[in-house]
Length: 597
Image 1 (cartoon, one colour):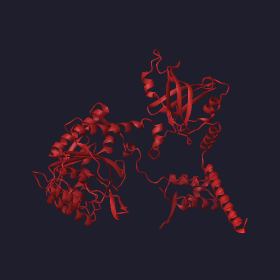
Image 2 (cartoon, helix red, strand yellow):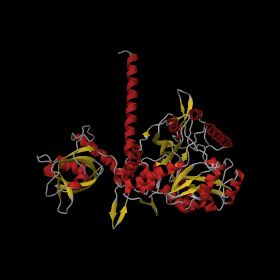
Image 3 (cartoon, one colour):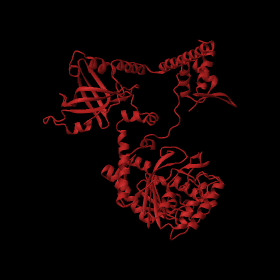
Image 4 (cartoon, rainbow, N blue to C red):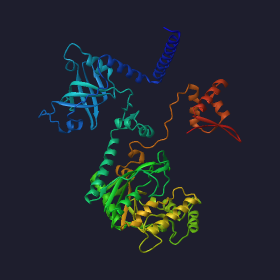
């Protein structure tokens, strides 16, 4: 072997051992980061494989029933369900020597199972019971069971297991909810954890699933109604060159091949109206929309809106249509039009009251906004203590007036109608008062759930309205609309008289399921980046507890309260600031320490 070849092989060996060393060091480090339970479960996983059991089998596991079907239809006298096969997650176990009880949970609920060692293992080898079931399976593992159904002496419907199959070995323990003296401990109730780990939430809080089942039923009910009318469900672009159809701040991205900016849609209105121009009688879409704005209990940057447009209709027809939709949804979900929403019992029985926006503002503020210019409206806001921005035009000022002083009064379903023209750049002017538009919003429990117009189909008027929006953009209103030249071109070909309506699906779901937050009706709501868990030493923990009691606090005072030596104090405060848990501020009155949110 040549010297050069030996040198190359030596280099390869060196690199190989270096990589292997790093790899195993990584495994070692990861192992150290695991909890005791996670280490034990990985050891069980290894032992299952050593026994020749695949903990993650690929083959189909055929089930022939569910927990609910068994509980609803089992008849002890008829001896039905004698050959059942179902699968689920182990939620509890009671090991009792040669026989054990467990509870498994499938997609429809929980059911008890009974496992007998000698029936599971009729031969001399008792490994499947003594080792696998008793020692290597844990709460959270998924198994398939075959057997027959019977009723225990305590009267509980139970599956007598003749054979079981390991279908999935879980490596993380589920939250262990415990009850003692009527109190629940360690329940998975922290909202942030629930929203981040919805999969765990659905496992340990099965009632959460009901919200999402009702949401789907709600959408299906609306879709069925629209289809009965003969309207067509369509799809429109999510990536748009012009973010139109609403006053909102968009998300911006860039298309590399076309080398142009694109926007995630804030609404699908302008595309649906193009389809009305094209000759469809009625079109609707359940659309994902995106608005780069604040987040709170009723707003998520990604949300679902239903929009529907029908030719030869006006906003009065659409009011009747909208209240029929909501009433029908309530009946489909609850069998009654009366629905509890927080502390209020809302009755969705039609018809709903109609109140003009001007009358609403006059009733709740004493001011008549009709005929007022921007300066006068700003004075009214100032008099009422409503904060305004210089960029706000008449429409925004009126919107603030109504939002701050009026909308919370409308608990029962109420149509607020006839909005000022400055608030509604896509709406036809009112047939009796050109200062107003033919628009309504449906208010429920102090919040808007639907917004509708007699659509503006005059292309000249529409162009002028867009140009007014451009002036607002130039003033600094980053929610004002762009001019959509293609939409104007479509209108110039002629759009028939049309009414359109948009409804917030997330918010309507909140009301129909009595959910206090929009995060409760979204499987995966948008969240702040998850903070990495930081392990604190005893000194750091002591300082953190002091900060939780009072923050900000004088640094010297905090040091004195901590009672640490200079060396330990320095290490503790540096550890907290390094991990961004606390910060030290230099103020005119001295150094202060405060918690970082």
